[in-house]
Length: 207
Image (cartoon, rainbow, N blue to C red; front, side, top):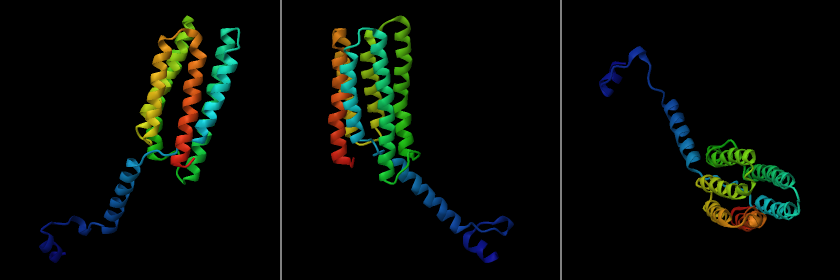
C-alpha cells in the first residue's frame, strides 16, 4: 500500500483500489448510450405509409358521399383509427426486421416529438365539434399532422420532415379554400402524399 501511495501521491482509504473493470464497463455503457442516442429512427414505414394513403383516398371518396355531417365525421374518425393501427403495425414490423425495438432511445425521441401536435389536434377537434365549426377540422388535421411529421422527422431520415412540410403547405391551402374542397385536400394530403413518400421511403430505406 505504501508503494501505491508513493506512486500515485494519493491516500486510498479503506484499502480499496479503483476497479479497472468497473470503470471499463461504465465507459462502455456511456459509449453505447451515446451511440444509441445519436442514431436516427429509421423504422418509419414505407409500404405502411402507402397503404395508409390508399385507405385515405377511399375514405375521401366515401366521406364526400355522406349527406349528414355526423356521418362524414364518422368516416374520417374511422379512417384515423385505421391509419393509426396500420402505421403502428408497419412500424413495429419494420423495426423487428431491422432487429431494433420501439423502446430504443431514437424511437422514444420520435414519439416524444410526434405526439404533442397530434394531441393538440385531438383537443382542437373536440373544441371545433363542440362549437359546430366542422369546416375548420380538415385544415387543422392536415396542419397539425404535418407539424407532427416535421418534429418527429427531425430524429428520422431526411425525407420524413420534407413530407411534413408538404402537409403544412396543403393544410395552409385548405385553410383558404372553400369548405367543399375539404375532402379533395384530405385525399391529396393523407392520400397522395402518403403514397408518394411511402414509396420513396420503401425504396430508399428498406420497406
